[in-house]
Length: 303
Image (cartoon, rainbow, N blue to C red):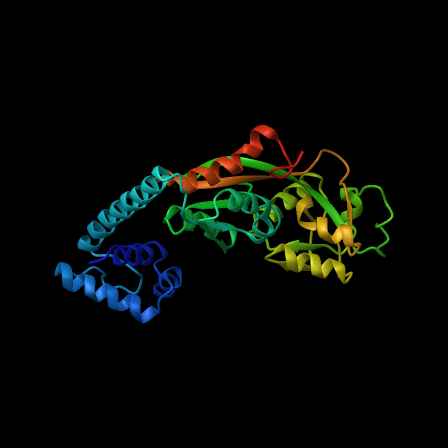
């Protein structure tokens, strides 16, 4: 029995998916099934209750998972501690986040971190917000990054940074020449929004509801890139995080306007599983992210 077998098994339990466990470990789905059978033979125990339609561990399987998880965490910490003694920080950091954060907020931090710790491998999974929470809770990833973070029993939420929401339109749109956009004027336009279950969309809906203004999008998308492309072809206007449209405004494909009234903020948070063992690589990466809180910098290394 190898440590790799325990990792594949834990990934299978935490993701409840043979295909996802295979992807996480760079093996085939059949290889995951074979490793499960090998473990059952080795321990002379049935690990997975195959009489159930849903993924469900047996009593023996639950004990094996809990013990395997402790072994893996101890092994990971041992490896990190030994590397730290050599003044070498290495290993893998797994992050789950949404597109708007992973593509527009995270890259400067990753670039700076890898300059300092080139032997660390960072893997990013792009997920819907609700699935980021699941991945963190089930130990599928080390960290989660979300907007409008919500407290959950098994997850610790660390504040990260705020981004403001702004109005965007195509350069030839009638509102493009204004200095700012009022919610009343925005409500009269064809609006392109995020899908209803996305936290930023929920906040936008709340703001319009409080002002008794209509909000009935003509299009809804699950990621920021598609929203921007739709606005660029003048299919409508939108409200998005400022950081996600910096390139388009520089290139002139979109016009970005502040929204009148109190600034609409989108708080970002870091999700960690409570009680998780921190490797030196993870500790250093988390420290880099949190430096932004005290310095209130827009991006690492910049004033």
